[in-house]
Image (cartoon, rainbow, N blue to C red; front, top):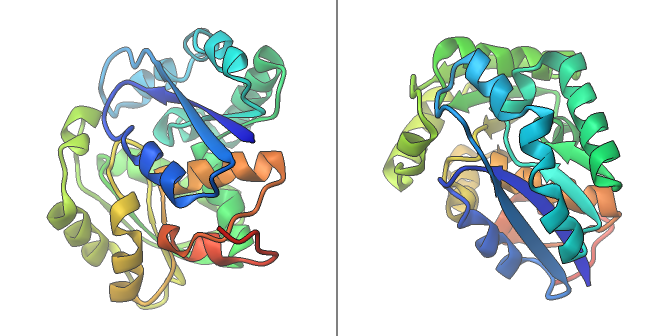
Length: 243
């Protein structure tokens, strides 16, 4: 049994994680602990506070007791809002406090792009434009070329969590560019896991979404690879551990 730990801010799209667990190997468990979101606002100061060391540390004991082998801070904006160096310091502090390998959703995107060998991406973000541009800057710092950024201007995670398939597809279509090799949908508050295969079929390219890459990043930390095509192109790379 491989136990993966996640610190998830508040309550929005956490039901993506049981869905992911069902699509992975039966010997993989996803344990999720909710952290205090503080002020629900996609504003830089609020996002940095959401990912403060104190808020992250509060959920670690429960994950340790669950037997988690690695922990991922399941929040994109609450990690990239600290900048490239600040996000590194955030996960270093998390690893020290947890006593296990640690990462965040933002780094999950960077590592996933390297995994699928993609350099040019379009970003479809629910965030306000200034926050979406911060994510694009984070990707550029990680060596990715961003061909376009579309922000939906939504301020709260609660509103994002209420989005359905129609809104997700509309945002993805509006953000995609012909020269992008993949489309990214950041934001762990957005329900996306059920839509990834259909999005990839419609756009004709890999689609990376926040909760998808968060789970993949935890697997990477534990050295596991799983072939699960229903989770998109990211989960079809060799070597394969067949589901």
